Length: 450
Ligand code: HEM
Image (cartoon, rainbow, N blue to C red; front, side, top):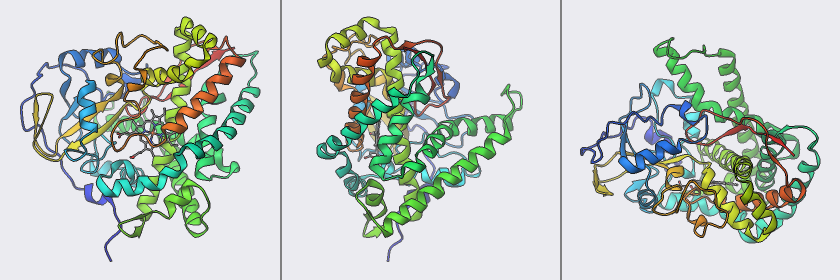
């Protein structure tokens, strides 16, 4: 019998190639998207613009002290579309669809590293399609229509619980809560366990930062002004252990006693005739709880900022509720909550005039594509009547296009219908706080007034 599939095992010792051909845009820019602090005031849209105009296929330096070579950084819509649409040339499995670097072998977190790799986003071909098929019933129109009824009631109860006389953090009061509820309904997570997911998410958003800070400290104590807090690292590791233990327990119990939920489908899915290995179960658990939560949560919060900064658009929406679907697409375009995905070349190829060899790394910055003026006129303007708002690439495109898109849109719609009819004066009342993370745009605090 063959071994169960493990992508992390295949990649553990893999090396990637430096550029086989010189960059056609050799601008010597100091822009560095691996510096996580760049992302703490929202996404670096002006730097995306600078690169899109001067070096849309930019040879980006590696992370600090990274053993891996440079990567190609894409900021133009048409290039990101082309890469996403050609998985044979631009693979997700040859180097992951998610991690810019696999990192130094000695520094890999024993559980997080493998689980960040052993899941559907990092599969190509039939393996990917077969596992994706198991997820599909939970995102079909009938299923989502039933779920909508529960989501509507949950939105209502969350809004009831807010004391509108005082300022509140919209993230903890609302945006964090709704996606956890919805996802738990899909996955089949008991009500009593759902708050744990909120805490795990907060720690996961900081995972990248903790690793980088640790590294900075080891290289040079002077680089970081604030000493790394080891209590924080211990707490982080404890949370990670708890999260995976919970995931394995619930998946194992659903393997034995399946019911009509997505975790039962994942627990009993087969790849090449075999049930998923423990590593693949961990990875699938990590993927679904992260992908299904963080993205919707940050769009829910990001929309408040857009509405506050554009009161004319808010008024237009209140007066013309039929604009709601387009408003949501425009919010997702502007927020682009997934900051990037990655691909790896499998052969000699050419992209936008740039020659590339096999084994080269490519990073697609979705927020840059979604503000490309060749597709979106006046791209920095928030325009809820924009005719092609839904052409954004925030959900990805091609074979890995977000499977959760209908659930995300449904939650956003139910939320904003009720929020705007009950609290038409809702607005930001102070500064937001965004996590240092270049993978997800993670809004941690969003003070609002009603
Ligand atoms: C505004 C909300 C969301 C955004 C912007 C978003 C964005 C994305 C992106 C960019 C990808 C990768 C596309 C690629 O590599 O080509 C993806 C994949 C995925 N998303 Fe979402 N997502 C959202 C909500 C959700 C929700 C609510 C769920 C689940 C309930 C979900 C589950 C997934 C899964 C399982 C994948 C992997 C699909 C595959 O590999 O075939 N997402 N999403």
